[in-house]
Length: 109
Length: 119
Image (cartoon, rainbow over all chains, first blue to last red):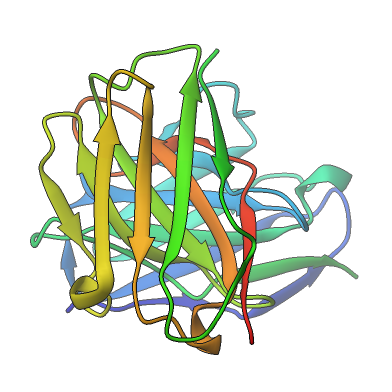
C-alpha cells in the first residue's frame, strides 16, 4: 500500500505570502493520478489540481502543482484570505483504490 | 450543473447497517465513477469505494468485508451500505463523482451527511 505523507502538518503564514505544501509517497506514484483538494470547515473538499499540475475548472492560477515520482508540491503563490484551509493530496493507486494524505492546515499567522 | 445530495438515517445503532443514498441531479448516473468518502469528526479523509456506471465496484481493502455499493439508473442515484457498524464508523459521509470518464479524482461532491453510531 502506498502511503502519502504531507508536510508540514500546519503552515502559519500571512496573506500575500507564498505557501509551499509537500506530499511524499512511500513508493513512486504515476503523476497523472495525483490530485490536490482544499477543504474549509463544514464544507466538502474541492478539487484544486489533478494530474499533479492541472488546475480544475475555476481554480485561480495562484494555485500550482509540480512533482513526479515520490515528491509532489502544491504552491499557492500569494495567499488570499479565502485560501486558509486544509489541503489534502490524493492518489489513485495501481490497485484502483484511492488514498489520501493526512492533510496540511494553512492558518493565518 | 451536476449536484449530489446524500440522504439516509443520521443515527445508527452499533452492529446495525448504515445505509445512505446519493441522488444525482443535473446529469446522468449512466457514466463516470461514483465514489463514497468519509471523514470522522476532526480527522482526515478516507475513501470507502467506488461504483462505475456499469456496476463494477472497488472498495477500500480495510472496509471491503462490510461495504456494498449499488446504483439505480431509474432513480439516478447510487447507494452505500456499511454493515456491523461501531462508533469508529461515526463520520461525515460524502458522495462524489469522478472528474472524467477515467477514474482518479472527484470534482463534484455532495455536501456530506454526518452519521453517528450510538445506542
